Image (cartoon, rainbow, N blue to C red; front, side, top):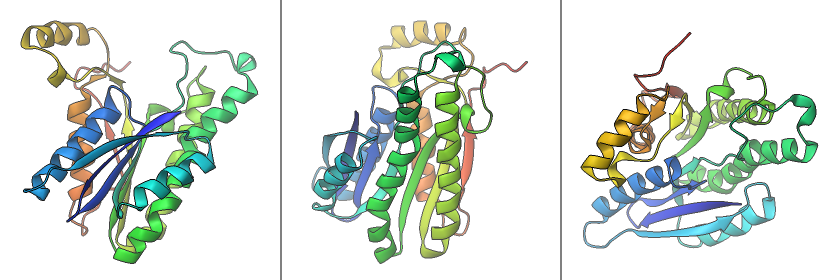
Length: 241
């Protein structure tokens, strides 16, 4: 199961973020919601959460029926991912059910969500769809076949949709998060941020989700004469062998 957050302001439609946890998904939702509040001026943006199972097409369809009853989706961010163990798992020990669920959440769910919003975007000749990938989207990682296979397929879906719908005014982009996402610095006190910052220096690729969310926003407001289809993000303190 995953949460989907939506924010709405009548002049600009709805921003739907699928896969909202305490880190990146939350920061993306907050960034889009803050903009909705700014453009609404005289009325606050409406923000609400919907429980959704990204591996279940019926759950996705019912969730978007509720969302689309409120207006059109201008931005879809698909950030859902089936959690996998931090430590590598021997391939022969991966349950087939777990592998299938990871593929369903990473790719099939993205497929269903995109199908829900693209007709409305086509009708209006505008819209943004952003998929969240990871380093496993580019290279298979030993012990992480569940994650890599699902993210590989998601990247392929993103490329297909970008080529098909770019001429129709729909911006489809894929973001590769190459590193570990930390807790947002903005949610802590100054002293806590200092302590956390020192700890993060010990972790390769530690990334602030609020900073990452800025890139999602940047992609949405890009001029249509210079759209980005794929971008990879990493921390400056990341070390390479």
